Length: 261
Length: 111
Image (tube, rainbow over the protein chains, first blue to last red):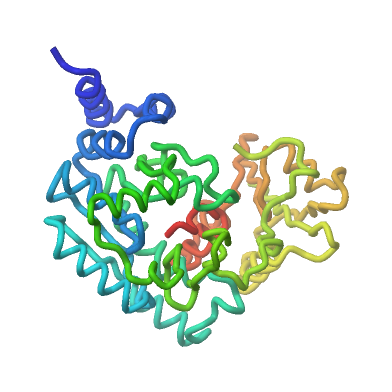
């Protein structure tokens, strides 16, 4: 007799193999109060073609959890070329500590060269971070995700009220799915708080990025990341020079009766 | 085929920067002539034609394109570069597409 979880995994595999859409919403509801380990197990056992995105920060807990479930799990990081030396050292420590299949994804060299030739090395301070992040992060990520059926991120609701308050533990990836290629995104830590993540790190002797000892909470590229003070919002350590009011492409709610779905 | 571009005037009366960039890009590529009509969504005026169209098509993003084909079917494009590829047959640079993805998906700030 199969257990509920095994039956569910077989059903997801069948749906996926036969090209039928997996009912992601039902899955998200079913797993909304499960532990991160349960959600990770579901991701790793339901999809053969799945990988973990690791930023070099406290999402290392995913690598630790996943390697206990599937020791040779695939893990990738975006090597933007602008990370802190501490982050590069940390990525290598993680690669050595766990038996994972680790990949560092690099941006398209011609695109980076063109950006630097036209706008210099710090254009994000004038033009906003989107263009540079698009080249150094989204381009290589999109290329990698095209070859996957599912991926796992360390996103948590408590990281940003503005952009993450509603993330589900599993969702259809709206940004990277295409009409020809449905991509599933798992966010096992969605309902965990920063305190729970750090409890796990300490209790399990998980290695962490030394920048955390110097007040860095959210860690990205060196020019775009700074330490924050106690009780500051985590995201105040990223792109702090940008004015939220200038993120201007929305047609604002007061004036549009029905929002895009 | 009939193409309508809806661009935005912000609540403070200034033009939307992204809309200006899109118009400039179309002009530089000599594609502006392919746009049959340009309509303004004025955030100060919910009755402006562009705001009405945004409401009708459930769009909360500017600029956007309404493409009517000869059989009367309509497609809405909020992605400029997808519009460039699928409707105008252009081949935008990857970095143009990824910049737009970042702008349209603020939750990608977790990367």
